[in-house]
Length: 302
Ligand SMILES: [Zn+2]
Image (cartoon, rainbow, N blue to C red; front, side, top):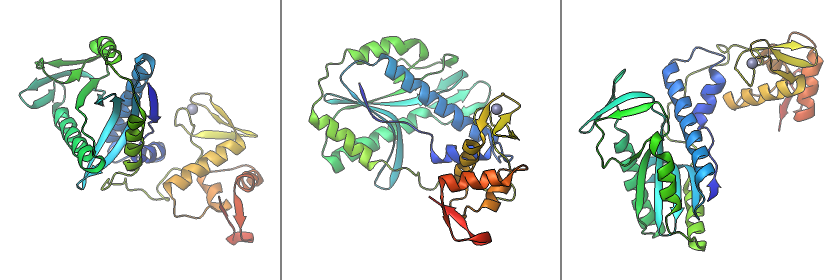
């Protein structure tokens, strides 16, 4: 297998990760679900990378649009004359399916994951036919990656792979007759070109500079670090980071959260809650960025 497109956290998840240590999120459960879903996708990637030896292309994490409808594909596998679409589900605990209603025994009804997957499959088929002129059969599967997931009353024909079936399913994938050609690569490239980075209509979490807790956040555990001379230290996990690297990393976080604000030495001193030597911060900024202007009105750009 060859990977054509890597996976990365969504912009929304990246922002929430930066906000979480610095404020009380309005919906912590939503954030936790995003993290859990992403962790499941990474586990699916690891499963594919370690087991898939067949001649195929893997395109991860596609956000596509057809007829003004946006749909997402966790992993798309291109075999010779065949496409597989995988939707990773990191559900945990006991679930029950009755007709088309899915419920968690602990938490009540959930959105039927089949609907979402079938919708994506149908839109993908139309996009391939109408925009790329490609008629390939598509098979889609829910990949239940979590070993502690049980689905009661599941139908035999459910297009799902449960944790206990991952190995035999991988053997099936490896036994598909597949010898790729240039056309298959072109298809993968075309799909990547159609991918959009930003889902429309995503409600951005509301936050402002003043409300966020200031300081340098530990890259390992999300606690706040303390300046100790040339390094910043995390008392929670023991992680240490060179002062310059910690400042620049915090500036990058600031830029992601506030792309429209100017980076001045004063704002970064405040953002990092620097109590010691201010010169170090200014030196770190000057080493990494270009200074525009002089004196109090100066600021830094890439
Ligand atoms: Zn830490």
